Image 1 (cartoon, rainbow, N blue to C red):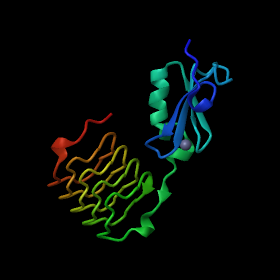
Image 2: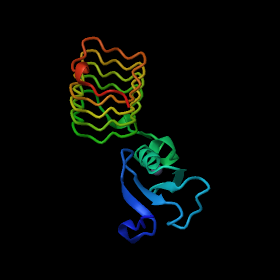
Image 3: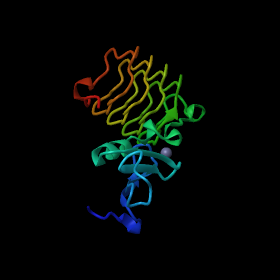
Image 4: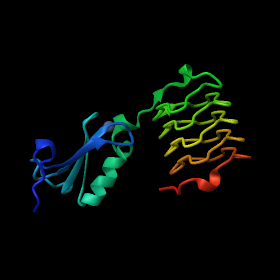
Length: 178
Ligand SMILES: [Zn+2]
């Protein structure tokens, strides 16, 4: 059995920043001094001290990259609605898990913005430029995306229920949902 000691920590396989923005480490449970009743491999959110175990390294790697699924701290959206003005330039902005429910983002410039997991419920994104924006797991329920430019946007796992997409550009290039 391989002995893991990434960064000098017994049993640590790797430790890195994930999509949620938090640092999540992967450990070989027993080598790290934990029992393996829960699973042979354990992921720990270093930012929020949440923990999850699985029996396969593949499984724990998948869990680590999706810490918002099991770490409460990683899934808590922060409310940024009040800081955003219509037509705002948000190019490249980090809006991960932002709560933009009902926000007026008409014509907003959101190119390259990271909107992973953002709540855009009923947001008005009419004509917004979302080119290359990361909308992974974003909640776009009821959002008005009429005429929005979604070229290259990552809509993997995004909830588009009820979203208006009339005339939206670039949907043919979107990545398949994971
Ligand atoms: Zn976390």
